[in-house]
Structures are given as structure tokens and as C-alpha cells.
Image 1 (tube, rainbow, N blue to C red):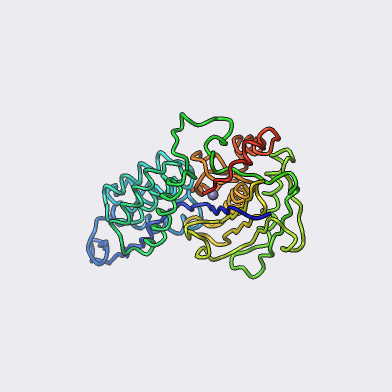
Image 2: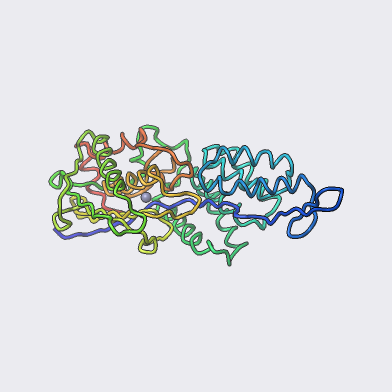
Length: 371
Ligand SMILES: [Zn+2]
């Protein structure tokens, strides 16, 4: 049968930037009075010196994901020198990574007010809004960043991210809904116009997983995580959709592969990309590509994050052609800032069951409009 439509959709990464400021604080012996404290050769108070030292010490802790240790140190620094924007920025980042969103937002807003020329704050603030589903706030913060810092090294990436968010809003693959209008049980209503499914005759879906050997960043455990993710959706669907591994790509209807090059995606601000080919009966084949390297240095690609990408892209390959605005859902439009082991949400589970329940076939198969 002729293929009529193809849809391509991914998972936007949220930005998060550490104020990578190693300020050159030094001391200098000064006769019998003791020491003089210097920043860039200029004298500063002892409190400020100590606070800046703590700030510098927080950077390797944050890079090593020792977020609570970094917070403990930065809170002391904040007491000694409450006017240093970089301290608030890094506190905001560490709190965001621990899921303390309200506190994180406060710290980042303080940093922004103290030092609007600190680019990192705008990026982290945009990323925090995005990862909470506050799309409009994310769009305006990223836009403001691009206006203020057109020459920043991350400007190109943020431009792609912003374009991706705007495109999804325009296409409706991020729904324009208020929280109140959302169905608590399932999200099929939010994805209307972006739903399809594999026809019964294509089940079980024949899957080929391309070996990742040689792809930078790939570790063998990734294949296992991808297999577990397929099983998780199958189990959620109560086996109404199922997968069967095949040994050759030529025999498969769904081909999964790995890449270390986000530049190979339609939007390079994405962590994975899925293409689905449909005809009047539904999906005929699909491809999933998963990124094996971190997009943002502050958010390393852990097994938790990889699992999220795999589960999300499989959701697209099963027929969810759009996203939700609820950060609890696997089909949420963005990666998260918190590094947690996440499974499918109750809404994911109900939605996949509904999508593959026989009652829904006619309603869904007539709708091949995809972004
Ligand atoms: Zn997606």
C-alpha cells in the first residue's frame, strides 16, 4: 500500500547552564595586619573573598551532580555576600536539579535582577520554565536571552530550541490548553489531529535495534534500556500492542538506531527523533533515533534520562504524534531537569490502552493528519 503521510517528531531538551565562573580570588600577605583579599587584583572584604571561594568550590560539586552538597555551601556563601548574582544562579540551578522548583525560580529571579548581564541565568530560567510546562514563559525568556546575547556560544542552540517550541505551538503538537481543560484520565483529547496507530494486521510490530557499537557515547546497557522501554509500553497496553525483535533491518517495520550527532535531527535541540509513515489504515513503518551524548553539559546523559528519551520516542512510534503539557507524562514535550527514574504516567497508561482498544479504531484510523 502506498505511503501517504510521514510525520517527524522529537523531544526538545531543556537548557540549563551553570555560571561557570571561576573568579580569580587570591590572598596576599600584608605585613603584621595579616592578609589582603583580592579579586582580579582588586582588594575585597574577607566575607566577599570567602563567599567567592565557596562559589568556586560549588562548581565541581554541581558538575559531579552533588547538588545538595553544593546547596549547603552556596547557602553559606549567600549569607556572607547576598549581592553576588552567580551564587544565586548556581543555587537556582542546584535546586532545579533537585526538583525544588519554587526555590529555584526565586534564586534565578534574584540573580537576574542583581546582574541581568549574566547570560547563564536567562538560559537556566528558560530551561526551568520549559521543564515545568510553562511554555509561554520559556519562549519569552529564551527570546530575551537572544536579544541580549546575540553572540553567545549557545545562541545557535537556543535559536533552534525556540524555533522548535514555536513550531510545536503553531502545529498544536504542544496543545494550547489550560490545566483546567485537561482530562485527568487520558490525553487523547489533547492530541486530537495528531493520533494514529498500527493496524491489527501489522502486530506484533517487527523491531530491529541497530547495534550502537562505534557510536560515541554508546554503552551496551542502552540497548537493554530500549528493550525494557518497548516492554513497558506493551505491558501498559495490556498486550493490545506488542513487539517482536527481528535480526535484520530489512525485516523490520520499526528500526531503532543511535546517533551522537544532534545535527542529523531536523531540530538539533532534540534528544531523539521519530519518523512515522502512515497510509489510510494507519502506521506502516517507523524509525527511532536516540542521541547517545548529552545536549547540555549540566544535564549528563544518565540511564534515567536515556530511558525517558526511549519511552518518549516509542510513544511517538506507537501513534502519539503530539505532546502534552503535563510534566508527569512521558509524552510531555520536554526533557526534565531532575534526574529521576521515571516510568509511564497513569495518563500514558490509560491513553495507550484507549489508542489500541478496538472501540477506538474507526475514530483514529480516519485521522491521518499529522504534524
Ligand atoms: Zn516528542
